[in-house]
Length: 461
Image (cartoon, rainbow, N blue to C red; front, side):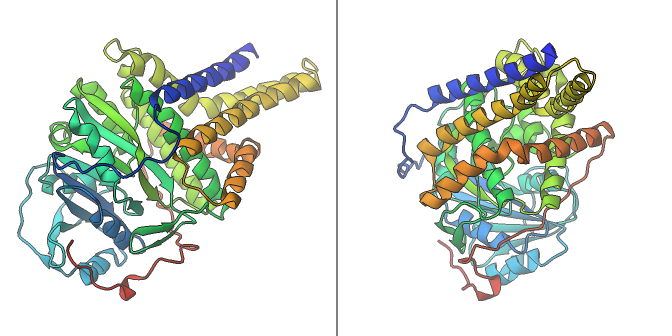
């Protein structure tokens, strides 16, 4: 029983440390930053957008990328063997034509069927290839990228015009080899042709709970890790890397189904130099699952990928070469990200057994039950305060009140679903399963969105 209590006390202490390091990181007025200055010296960047069955979202993503305030960039959309109208939507909207353009680099990936350029916008390249998964699609885009930086962005996401500029500014230091920004929840917001019009909290409680999770991850954990150059993950929805480094490491790896975390740990393990930065201002808005089935599949995949990746890079544990990563961050991930659901299940089962045997009073049993609940409640509330005060986007008082309500409710219901899905993902990792359960896209409530048939043909900017 002391082990269970000690486990959650250490969990609480770890999160307090994250909060403290985050406060040290944020040394600016508590307000959303203004427009960044023009920075023409920034290295050119290729934006890679892997897409599989993204007919409903791909145009908004491409349009948001095209509006980026960045000195020089191109966009490479990789159609990863989609079975819907993803390629046709792009062809009809951007007037695509085949091109014999050869790859700039050789990185292993599935067969390329056709490469298209856009007559409407010379910055846009579309690669149609045989399906191979997200990492394989990124490798195809990497082969055709020509700029020193590559930005990896999901095909269901919207990029704010200044996000690329803010995040790439980290590369002003030659030490920086990778950088990530904040990912926020798009559900409930209004947008038109890739431009965000209004920010609102999702109406769905399931999506709202993910807002809370994203706040906790992006405004507490990652800034604290980055402060000590101990990032364990840069979100796949928005990350920037030096191209030559990724090529030298052999491209992205899809066998763990967590290519974002795998690449970050591979950089730590193999590259051995350089810094990975996290910049809290850049924002990419992504659509999250709104059905229980879709969310469960996503979380099982995430936890399976976490388990496989941590095991693959277990040699980094207690590494003298990476003291903060090896002695603080990775032990935290092993204990409180990977094994926490198992410890929670065993702890509650043990508590129940002791209570039924009469070795625990009802008061002690309830106290042990509410220990993790209370710790989670305090940490979620603190994350909400630290994330939404300096960088908050929800201005409607109704949204703010609902966000507070659902934050306070999280430990009593949502966390138990997460525990079940994470246990399922852990079991899947033990069986060495690597599958991709793609959620169904929802665009309800986004009333400003227009169908691709109704869009005017864009012109090059």
